[in-house]
Amino acid sequence: MADPVRHIYVHIPFCARICPYCAFYKVRADPAQTQRFCEALLRELEMLGPRFQIQAQTIFFGGGTPTALTTAQLEFLLSGFQERLNLSALAEWTTEANPGSVSARKAALLKQLGVSRISLGVQSWDDELLTTLGREHNSAQAEASYHVMRDAGFRSVSIDLMFGLPGQSLAQWQATLERTVSLRPDHISAYCLTYEEDTEFFLRQARGEYRPDVDTDAQFFESAMRILEGAGYAQYEISNYARPGHESAHNRGYWAGADYLGIGPSAFSTVGNERWQNVADYRAYSDRVLGDNSPVASVEPLTAQTKHAERIVLSLRTASGIPREWLDAWPTERQEFVQLGLLQQIGERYVLTPRGKLVADSVAAAFV
Image (cartoon, rainbow, N blue to C red; front, side, top):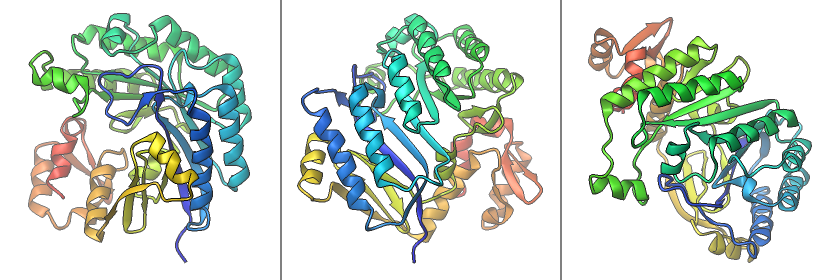
């Protein structure tokens, strides 16, 4: 019998405003369609139940903006998950939230219905940069939303930040880090902006309006490591920092190569030697599921070699690194990276050095 699936991702694509840098599937919310969409999510969960053993340890509501749903819709959806799943082993239930989209009443409801962790998409504390990013909130609204989450009593509150933004200075980034630390969140994610295809930022980069600077991005990254680790946050993955006991269990499942089910439009699932993706259109998704048809748009078989390569790439980004024997097939490359000061052996494992973290993708590419 197959092992139980312990991780569930739910994609809620609705946004009040479409950010010009975001490549995830997202749309402006249509109030006439959102309730039907919530019904479809629960129906897909019902359809998956007989096919898989689901013993949820983590649930992650991402988007989009899950908190763009109304309080009544969130109650309908979260209550539906509780009714359809055995949550006795649930260790973490995360919901992403945008500042300004969560009232005290909505936050209290999320907490009451089992959400234990909030990931708040602040991105920057600089109002000018927030305008560049197309965010609908300003820094004052972001701080107010953070305190709403804190007051609601969630076990963990994470703040998401971005660096390498168009026009961003090192001083602005350091000020954002220091203001974040002063709020004492449990977890901080700090991601470098990437110019993804099918985004407005990608087109502006192609026209020469935006010019990424690798050297400056490295300075931003080094500042994040220095300031956040100095404030007591352990860098347990290249872009993620946490106080002890507040690491993201859901993301750790991904990085460890665990099976997971993705629910909702565009969501990916990986179970065993197969990966599939749902149709990336919430209306088509709802039509299919509520008509008792599969929402799957594509299926990819995974070889053992592919899965192992993915494990190397993802695990090498973490503080625990990878087992020594995983690199036995590349003794020359392994030794070169050690001599260059990019990789180090600790016990029976190899981990990236601080310098190696700056070029993690290039190091990992040599072993896959």
